[in-house]
Image 1 (cartoon, rainbow, N blue to C red):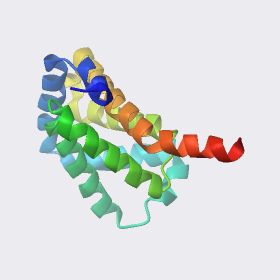
Image 2 (image 1 turned 90 degrees about the vertical axis):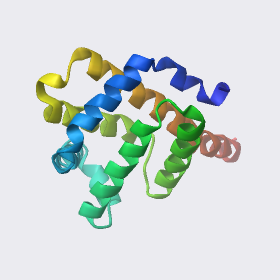
Image 3 (image 1 turned 90 degrees about the horizontal axis):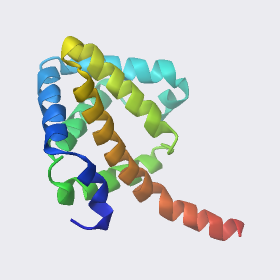
Amino acid sequence: MGRRFAAMQILSPEDIEHVRSSFDRVWAESRRLTDLFYGRLFETAPDVQPLFRGNIDEQKQKFLGTLAVIVGSLENAAVLMPAAATLARQHVDYGVSREHYPVVGEALLWSMERCLGSDWTPSVAAAWRRAYAAITDHMIASAYTAEDAAGSLTRG
């Protein structure tokens, strides 16, 4: 699988199934999920709201579509991780910093929990945490490592 995809090895088949099946359950109320997510994100991190310059309804659809692709690709790291790296580099251009990733993760998991109710079990929550950590660790490394190295050369 390669060293750069090693993070995905921490996801078991059960983790992938938990993430997929729970995402499938919230799909019918995806509008509620995105409303909860952005509401929570802007409540807990109001400084990120200016990063969203376009139509927020369009942004909600893009977010949901991206999340669906990620969830659908969890067992295929050779496809998922390069796509996640590209997404991360694009987000740098939008003003996203590495500090935003934990806040976004908290808002996502909080929203999933609200949508799933009693189906948000400890094992489902743990699977989502592991999946989010694996993907975002890769995204952060892809988007900021080269930038950090260049910055240290100029500070040097």
